[in-house]
Amino acid sequence: MLKIIMGLKGSGKTKELVGLVCKAVSEGEGDVIVIEKDRKLTYDIPYQARLIDAGSYDIGTYEFFKGFISGIHAGNYDITHFFIDNFYKLVNDRDEANVVAFILWLADYAEREKIEFVISMSSDREKCPEELKQYLI
Figure (cartoon, rainbow, N blue to C red):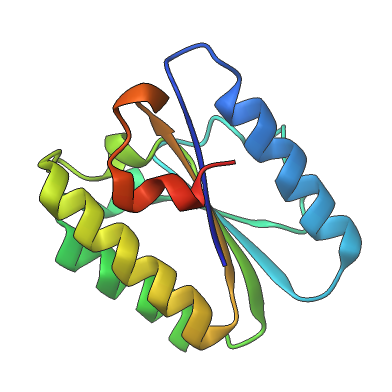
């Protein structure tokens, strides 16, 4: 399952994401991974969630990001949730077709591997591509 938290800067996306992380950890079904650009959430999320500072890996492209997510999962099949904060700060490519292609790949990956993904994106909900509207929460 894939969910997207989309809104403009200051709309409370990260706060909502943190609440969902806390809920996932409290349910205790499996491992929870949080990916962000910096370590700003260190004190906001429960210590049981694995916080990954993706800024250390210079992700940059969607192909790299696919490999990054797949590699994390390959090393731990107990992962039930991935949370990705500030998506556009991790990937340099904002081309709409490429964003849509990546999100659709991620939705397929989530379904196939039975993992829940939640992504926060700083963007105007009104300008969301049609293909992604089904994932908005």
